[in-house]
Amino acid sequence: MAVIGYARVSTTEQDPQLQLDALEAAGVAKVFVDHGVSGTKTSRPELDACLAYLREGDTLAVWKLDRLGRNTRHVLEVIDQLTERGVGFRSVTEGITTEGAMGRAMLTIMSAFAQLERDTMVERTRAGLAAAAANGRKGGRPHKLDDVKAARARELRASGMTAAEVGKVLDCSRATVYRYLADDAQVTA
Image (cartoon, rainbow, N blue to C red; front, side):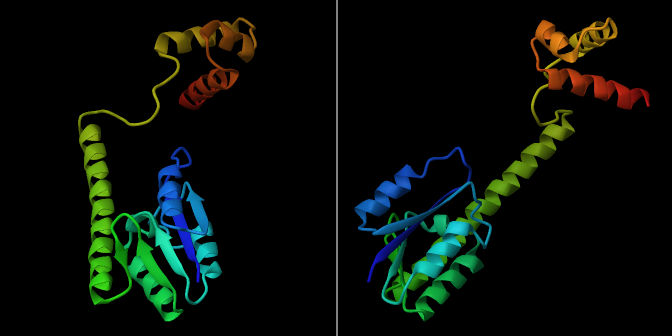
């Protein structure tokens, strides 16, 4: 009878240490961690390994319910599978456990809120992108070279300089020079 933990961060830049510390304080013996994996995915390498590792009498612990998943149906399916296998579940931060009717009811409500939060973020992002597009703004990284520098790159390249030399003059990479020259070739073709 062991307490096994699962932690997840959505991007590789995020640090799961807060989750790991909380799980350790909760007495977790082993932790599986997914890095850079969305909670909307039903199959995640470490979650799958964690679920396969759990045995009857064990308890799966997560820092917060939304670490297990952002889709209510998926979360409830995982919990049902654990229950059928005789494995308990515990969300450390929310204090939710599958023991008792109230715990299972709260689990359902909290997983619905996790999905609502995710759906609201997606909705806001789409609305923001649509508003920006309507105002003529385009997302993405800013151009390294403006029109003047791009013209200068063409001149320098035409004069016989290598792309690497042009890049040094304009303070950009050789690949950037090639990209701008290729853009010109596509426009004239």
